[in-house]
Image 1 (cartoon, chains in turn brown, orange):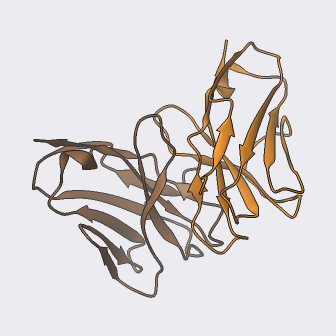
Image 2 (cartoon, helix red, strand yellow):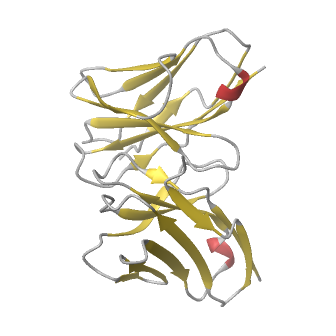
Length: 111
Length: 112
């Protein structure tokens, strides 16, 4: 069964807008929550990751918000740019390497 | 510094055949994990190799097998191919199991 549920399936945002992608998990043993960015024809690349001892982590225009009690985490992309158009995957694991991925969100940034 | 390299990039097989996919990890990495990504889906963990042994395995049948060589490179073998095995097969490497996974660009397998 899918251990990480991701929404929405796709979203369109105007240049300069904010993209928000949400994920929910069930396994309380998960202790590592990365986000990956994938362009067509490429493998996923790590964007940003968080562990449950913090509620928020920011790297440049990308922010992860983490709610341990709700078992949810989200990715915010601020000031979205056309180059951000890609598929984004959330993931979770309890041993860093056996990642359970969400189904992905295709983000389209309109100029 | 070469990243994770995979071969072949694309291949077409027919049902019942066998396929071998290859992966060279990023320089300095000693652990290789394999993932299957069906079209429009997130990657699913197949197995991981460290010190030439399979350490962890996902929910995949025994038709999927692998190997790691002393130089840390790895192979994924799939026997008795089914139409449902059509997917992008991703290799990811890391230093032991403590850090970021670096993914290759994948091998696109089509089973007819």
